[in-house]
Length: 155
Image (cartoon, rainbow, N blue to C red; front, side, top):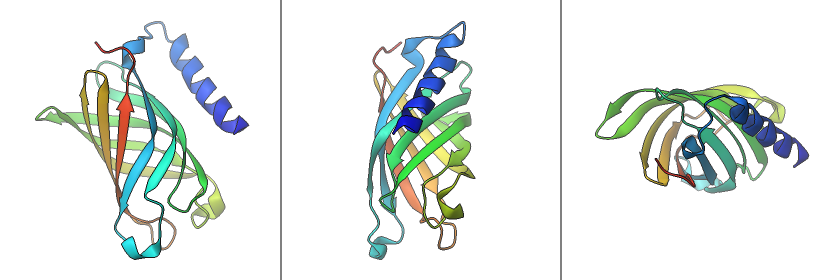
């Protein structure tokens, strides 16, 4: 837990140090809901946690970090950057490039890189990230992941 607080604090401090920090661009989330492709494996679909992301202008290179209870019922952390260069019908399309840890069958629970296709819809105080998590043999289970997010101050 202390590592998570340090990670979140360092991410927030780095964002706050930026000269143009704007609280209306700071989003928070309470984890994910994952609809797994392997429904018969008894995986955890509800993945509670906490995370933050910051939407710069233009809308590319958005940092994010968080911690959650993963599908294997273990604690995981993530850091990453959104790259969503396309917008269609109000939805941002692209992906997130980052790193995760805490999956017992993947790299002994250590950190590993990931590229995940992601679509984002944002309006007012609410937003939704939808990610296609690809399976990785018997290490990670594939899913469509939904992340509801909130910003306290809208544009």
